[in-house]
Length: 186
Image (cartoon, rainbow, N blue to C red):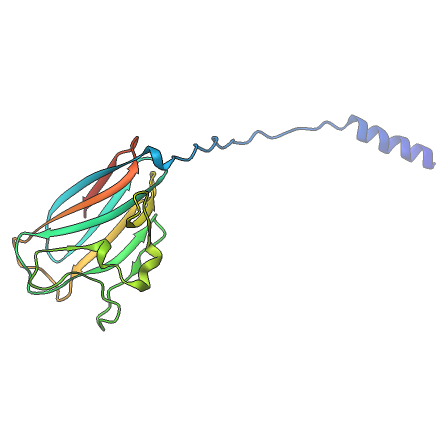
């Protein structure tokens, strides 16, 4: 009886067919871009500034890019400060910076001035945003590609800016020479 049972189990194992499933394979990873293949580009955008804006910098290639300066120029001096409101690096979600209490304010353009630099204004408690770029400058780093980049929200402290205020943003970016870098306002 044991032999018959063993023969039946053996026949079941021998006659069983094995199938396989086809799955999607991932494309091979692209090789990293050497810093020797990086270049410097300056991009700019213009907007009518009403007291709040978001600056977004992106790169088409999935490789890190570095923002060593992001200077804002105003057509006329405002009576209030422009501060950093939010930071969103690589779509990870906005980090809220601005606070009414003032302890966490990052002042980009002091009241009465017509220009200021966001990168130079980053305080020590936000130093995790800064790295050394390929040229040795302090820079904000972000990844390129379709869902990456950096979005910086700015605002005036006391609300709306005077009508007719124009803002120009100029960014100096180190990125792979084979990519396109864009700066936009929203």
